[in-house]
Length: 444
Image (cartoon, rainbow, N blue to C red; front, side, top):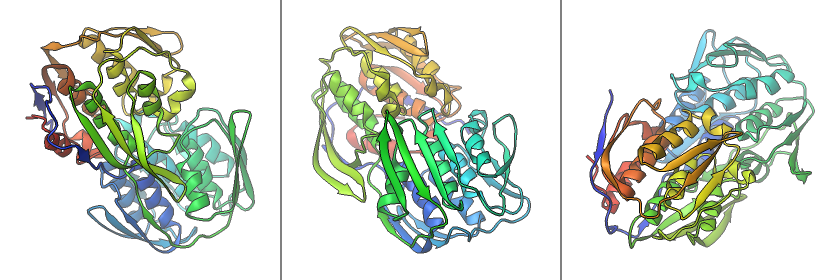
């Protein structure tokens, strides 16, 4: 059913000054998958209960793992590296979750029968080749639809270790190779373009797996010794920086507001949006910094500031802000000057073609934006931007980030907005509208 939200009013003075957001999605999915391969009962608190995480839970249950999940508390009874059960004609549905689909491909590395992985309409358009190609080197067999879902996977009796160079900066590709390496008889060597490093931090600091990490010539070098079982573990998942980013931008672009967002994962591979916004003049601050099992966390303080300047962003920041560029585009639309963002092709490989949608939304807002070579954009900011017209957002493949970014535009720039597929945010951030309303948003 196509649910539509209507927003006719900008947000005014916030009713509260402190919020919590849902647990980190990347860490929640990795907890579900890796705890299933442990030996014993693992417990997580503040687990994100979104559609993407639920798809990971449902898939692991189909593989014989006993999981109890209530609210944000979860128990997983791991059965070891070789304890998964593979029934004949097994179908695993990853729904809208690219992380689940790609990492699940590695989880099935020792399946003795063909297992089918599928997903929703959006996920079936996304590239699976980035994990299929390296996983084949381990000896894993695939039947696929031109590197798109659905795919069928069957494992060999024994995986052989590999050497692989990952050139896309894809954390999902790197993580899939690392998970497959757990069952390989020997040392797997990875040379990777920098990307999110949650998996290697969990391997080293939580699972205590024999792993060597170093940097060489702008690459991350990862060596993993396979065939090492690991014991049960507990994990308290910090808040998601991607979810927090919507409220950071909401606060920045609203008038005379300030906000504290509690206990957020500020892993350096994830805070590109903070670096970019501060380059624009935002002055976002971290305090109460801690280190939790290798992951840095902090409370985030942000206050309103429309006196912002344009930026020319080094593409090296792209991977650490890849999920937040729609929000960054909104901020650039009110910066003084011309902002330039380069090499954003990965945006069009997400749940929808986000780069194209970012351009479309800014053009609807009468912001001058131009696509430049190598999938970059120039944005001519208008510091006095105020919207008056009616804006309709639909047919965006139920991409949760397009929906949420559109609500931020409506609440900060004005106008009358009708945004379709309003339930899609539940794939990543089920409490999103509830928190917006608690701040004083008027959403119908």
